[in-house]
Amino acid sequence: MRFQVVNIGLIISLVINFFISWYFVCIFTNDLVDGTLITILIFVVSIGILFTPVGDWWYRRVALPLREPDMMERKRLEPIFNQVYERALEKVPNLSRDIKLFIYEDSGINALAIGLKTIAVYKGILYSNLSDEEIAAVIGHEFAHIANGDTFCTILSIQSNVIVSMFRTVISFLLMVLGKVFGLFSAVFLKGADLTSAEDGFTLGESLIKFCNWILNKIVAAIVMISVMIAQCSRRKHEFMADNFSADLGYGEPMICFFERYRDKDYFEDKFSLSYLLHGTHPSMQARMENLRSRREAAEKVF
Image 1 (tube, rainbow, N blue to C red):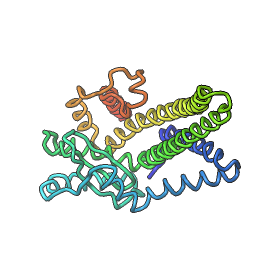
Image 2 (cartoon, rainbow, N blue to C red):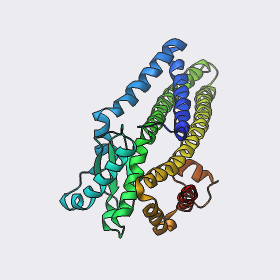
Image 3 (cartoon, rainbow, N blue to C red):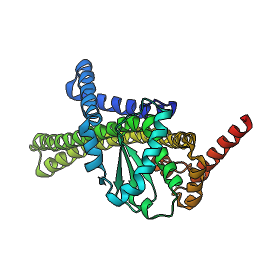
């Protein structure tokens, strides 16, 4: 596994999420040293376990409905997978020797890499008219994500988002309880006036805490949104690097053919839209074809 500069965006996302979590923990502990140590412990344990065999099990059985290929699927895919694997090992000798092939129960024409040892081919590929070389190009692209450390950094980023979400939920719940308690004390304090004042005091006290909770959630949501946009920008750059990796394995032309087939499947037309910035994990297929062609032309000029 190699660390690529394009992974910096995911690391920045991790750092942002760490500091949000650290802030929440420090509120509970009221101590910077203890808060820092506890936050580090939470991140190390919750993220570290995903890089163990438990993590492999989680990705393959819980996170996604993956299964091992049946006999017919093995007959078609294993020779292709093994060929790509051999070429990937020649390019990156320290690549894990324990990467496994799985089937993702989806009719799409795609593949994915998850964790450090899992590549899954969408079931739809088996019923498509893709050539063996095109399938090899797609699998080579997924090997790149593992070899380049993309999946490693993605785990860090996604799990840190989960930790922040957990803290936000806990804080929101505690503030809700605090709002009830504060409202009750306000009602008791105003009880000597009249019933209406007591009811108003309860409503006012609870509303004040709810407003504080709303402000906190909006601030955290805005920071998380920035974190996600940085991470997505990094992921889109991963795709160009992974395409180049597959091309280096000898699958550049088949990769271009694959993009030509499915160029009308691009989901985001406006790359500057908020939807694309938050949810767009891949550049357009046109951009990816242009990248591969430019790279090929540059190589031809050298020779």
